[in-house]
Amino acid sequence: MANGINTSMTAGFSAGKKVTIVGALTNTLLIAVKFAAGFFGHSQALIADAIHSLSDLFTDLIVLVGFKLGRNAPDEKHHFGHARIETMASAVVGFGLLATAIYIGVDAGMAIHRHEEYSPTSIALIAAGMSILFKEILFQYTIRTGRRVKSQLIVANAWHHRTDALSSIAVFIGVGAAMLNPDWHIMDAFAALLVSFFILKVGLDIIGNCLKEFIDTAPHPEVLAKITSCALSISGVQDVHDLRVRTSGGLYLIEIHIIVDGRLTVIQGHDIAKNVERCLEDRIEDFERAIIHVDPAVAPARAEF
Image (cartoon, rainbow, N blue to C red):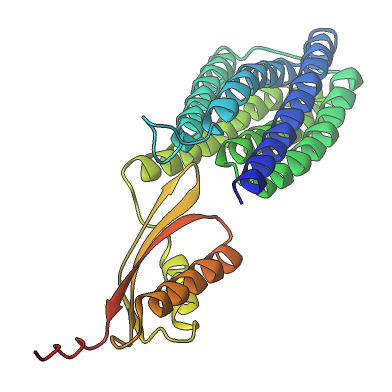
C-alpha cells in the first residue's frame, strides 16, 4: 500500500512539475511578444499585460518550490505531512497578483488623469489575440492537472493563467476600440485599468481560500452532508456524530464518530470503520485521510461473576 502511495505522489509531482515548466516557457514567449508588440504597436494596455505575464514567471518559481516541498511525505517532525507549504505558496501567488493589480491600476489611472494619447496598431491587436489563445489553452491544461493531482497550488496557478487571458481580452477590446476611432485612444488606458480589477479579484479569492485553511474553516455544508451520507450508507452504521473536517493543501482531513451495535466484536467494529473509510475515499473528491471512532449503540451487559 505504501509503495502505491509513493508511486502516486511521484507521478503527481512529475505532472505538476511538467505543467508548471510548460507554463513558464509559454510565459517567457508571451512576455517577449507582448513587450515588443506593445512598444512597436503603441499600446499601454499590452505593455501592462506583459508586466502581468512577467509576474507569472515569479509565481511559476514559487509554485515549483512550494509543490516540491508540499509533496514531501510525513516525517518525525511533521506527522501530517507538508501540504500546508502548498497553501503558503498559494498565498504568495495571491499576494503577487495583488501587487500586480495595484501597479497596473495606478499606472493606468495616472494615464487617464494625464490624458495620455496612444494610438495602438494592428500589431498590438494580433499580440493580444495570440495571448488570449495561448493563455486559455494553458489555463485548461493547468487546472485539469491541478485537479487530477489534487493540488490547490497548481489550481491557483491555473487561475493566474486565466487572469492573463482575461486581461488580454480587455486589451483586445481596448486596442480594437482605439483603432476603430482614434478619438477613443483613452480606451486603451481604461482597458489596462479593467485588467487590474480582474487580477485583484482573483488574488483576493486565492488569499481568502488560503486564510480559511489556515484557521481550519469547515468545508461547505454540502460536503459535510455528503460525508455523513457516505458513512450512513455503510451496513452496520446506525448513526454518526461529532463530524469534524479541516483542510491541508486543499485536501480534507476528516474525524467522525460512528455508532454501531455495542454487541459486535472489536474486529467487526473495525471492519465497519474500514468500510466507511473506503466509502469516503471513493466518494469524497478531495479526501486525504480519516480518523473514525467507533461508539457502541448500547453498553454491553456486564459480566457476572
